Image 1 (cartoon, rainbow, N blue to C red):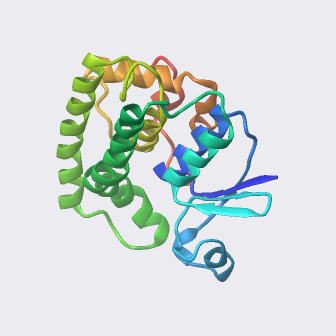
Image 2: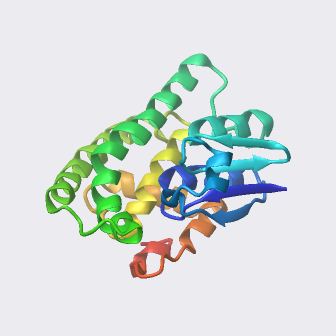
Length: 221
């Protein structure tokens, strides 16, 4: 039995969900209101964060560590390159999106518009929203530059770097905060990711009080 304690609009949880599905591993999804810091949840992860993955008797946290564990213990399809240079590039880009993109964009748009209301923390900070809307343009341009040189973000094969980026962008797409017309190459890349069977459950997510836009689940935008 595999259980994933998650929050639907967490990019870190979505990265793990994509990896599980890509590896054809069925998991029971248990939605966790992690901000309430319940004693049961803190016993699973004293850091008080999602995702938390339970496989048999093993309890794991931290999305990057979980995804690499799943990749190493389930060979096909491979989401990490075999060569050291390739693995470095994948990890560099995963960190780029989970750290820099998350700090500059995801936390400024998604957390201000959605998480604050769900957690009862008040209204969005307009300065943060404006900053996130400005910074996402820079990141989309950087992704376009990478994809002009490669088939996928980290090279010629799809990797965990693509799932990490797509996890963040899918959360922002849920609230219509991605300008897909800014870069046709990035839009085509996302369409390829979005069309994969592993993406289907993400496109079915529904957050009460926050309906997704019509294009969110449309594979042709």
